[in-house]
Length: 477
Ligand code: G6P
Image 1 (cartoon, rainbow, N blue to C red):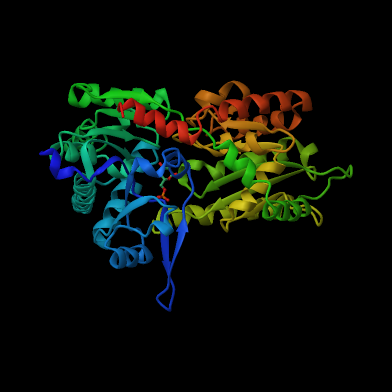
Image 2 (tube, helix red, strand yellow):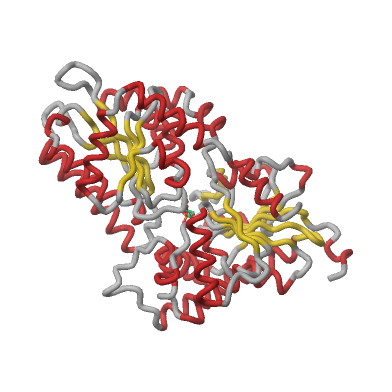
């Protein structure tokens, strides 16, 4: 590749399915931009505009597609906080088959071990068809990155949507330094090889096109290495690193003390109310997308078991549970969302009294209200059946006003960092989780404050900006 050909290219590139901005199109044809949050967005803010980074992402909806049509794909910097963002308009059917059909229904399910195996998965014709869309979608990213990158540039590709990109990009542009970061767990080989052999191999070889692969914990990195050993003869020249993305303390603390959060705290306090002793009730908080891997139903059943086996907590505790709809294009997610709400309603029906609602469940996404709940938390319940990291486990200790006890699943990536000061649970064990809730609720104030402080310190050890810079440094930028 002649160096002049890429003279104006970017030195640093990021690729992810979801970009830092999304658009909504109203009836009068007006486009409004909504900026996204999350670790990647704040991570990227660590490099200044002079770095000339380009972020390549997909158009996810009609608003995004219209924005691409109007701009040719190079989004207006006014909408992106000054960042250079190239949005790809991938054919909507191809996109949906890649995103819903493969990324969210197959790769997400494999890495979180979510299949109910007597019936699923079925890797037949439909799957093969969707897989070719996943290839096309990955190719579109690889080609866009190849076009945008300067000679020798560093490219950091994100997540399971884009596992084939490193290999494809390596072929198009051998001069680039390519990294890939997984935000999910990685499946152990016995589960991973449920994928048809040719597909499993294609995924691993696609990833191994990178110079360096990043994972959130050693456990996921080891699982990946195990799959490579067993299925493709090892890692070859690809290096592996672990970077445990932490909470963004500065952003969170500032955001959580704005008036809109105070207002929501007042409303929540009223809903929570006071117990028979006239003191405010204890608060168990959980905040999740209604995601199958988050284990919300078992969390509710454990809370019910607490009320059943430890009746002294009745009227003295409220479970504030926010479950925000996610991936509602998939039937199984819609069913799960309904089940979560059904179980919460059942608990309220069975145990509620005129002055006490045992579960305060809200499903309408409201970030300020989530932060308000974090501040009020006595106990945070984070009990996923499997989770790459889980940032809620890190954010609540940072924000809880009086320090919180953390009930944490040993299957969350965050367990590796926070396990010592959390009350840890096997996420399938309802009675064990109920007992952990009891222990957390009963923890002496002094111990709780001390543990919460240590949790917060650990949780903020690798803030998004450093996490992102570490990935770049590992590519020797
Ligand atoms: C979670 C996961 C990420 C993933 C994201 C996609 O945050 O931890 O690994 O990239 O979901 O969510 P989306 O709403 O874009 O499907």
